[in-house]
Amino acid sequence: MLTLLGDIYEKEDENDKIFVALPLLLSIAFLSLSSFSVVPDYQIRPLLWRKLRICCTRLDLEDETKKNEIRIRYDTIQELINIVEIGDGDLFCGLGTLEDCFRMFSYVLFRPLSSPQHLELNALDAEVPFLDPDWEFLELTHEFLLKLVLFSLFLSHLLRSLVLRSASIASV
Image (tube, rainbow, N blue to C red; front, side, top):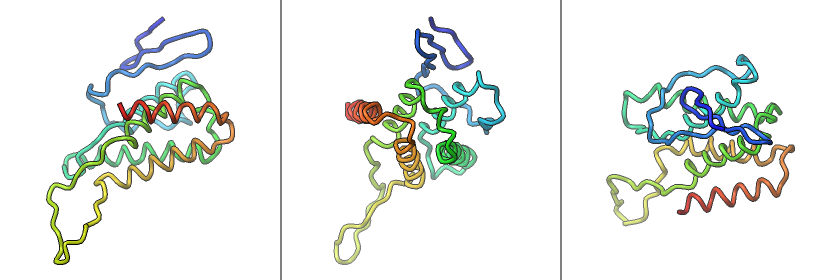
């Protein structure tokens, strides 16, 4: 059964409620969302889904009008890292939630790197190192992935299958 909850759908099955994402092409309202500690229990999963969706958004870092959105995205991924660090990772124990997290990882981490717009070679024609403009966010996302994988409540075979599935989806 699918139930519309704002901009997400709630799908109930016999084991768990799974929140199904709308396509990423739809616009996302970049608002500073509430902290997990202040929302009621029934709103935690939709809030987590919204936060993961904000983390999936690719932004033009050169655009001065996007500074607020960039700050919100950094704050959101940092909050997710902090939740896993303090041991409140039971939020991530559901299979549907883990799949949503790994879908975000596959979208952010397993993607083609952007190429530099203007490549200048030095006098020795040596290769110039290039970092993705969004490198800091990629580092935070990678840190979130590592902390989530190292969280002790997860079964290793479940995580292994999710990582392999995410990598295979991203390569298609």
